[in-house]
Amino acid sequence: MDHVEVGDTKERLMEAAGRIFSEKGFKAATVREICRLANANVAAVHYHFGDKEGLYKSLLTEAFEIGLKRYPPSLGLGPEAPAEERLHAFVHSFLSRLMGGGRFAWCGKLMARESEEPTPALDHMVERYILPLSVLLRQIVAEILNDGTRPEDARAFNCAMSVVGQCQHIFRNRAVIDKLSPSLKTDEAGIAALARHITDFSLSALKHLPRHDSAQA
Image (cartoon, rainbow, N blue to C red; front, side, top):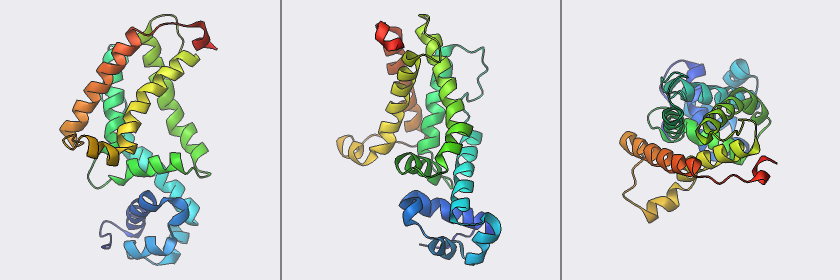
């Protein structure tokens, strides 16, 4: 693997750590291989981040911040926009954060790894980033349901989970999906098409979803 050439030592360490942690996970990755890729001294990790865990937590924070800055969940829509449009923006931005390419393509992989192999950093990530996104999606879903469901109800949570699950399925099962449908693209146009489909599919389900008392339990 070639050396990371961007920026100063701290930036190179973050870039290298992003690649290695996203590929190997927190446990399997080592500070030495990160430093080797970053062309930096091991002492630099201790100077800038304290230890491996500090580097990883800083990296997770950076991944969320970069993703939300590039693809905010509203995609520029105001709160007065129709709920259907806000759902599409949420889905499109989420897919883009998961599968967007370029220099920061490791961000989505890193966040997915943290969900699969949680570390002590997860609680902080949930409280600071994931919970606000969950609340936002549940508010949108409850508005679309328009049947008295509140964002805090289990019905809204389950529906929001179903929307997110469609996005995550494409990302997490890409190897299988590529074999089943080699023509499926996840470039910018492909992500836009997937976002439109998931939104339309979800809207149809939400607007025809039977109401059961047990859904509010």
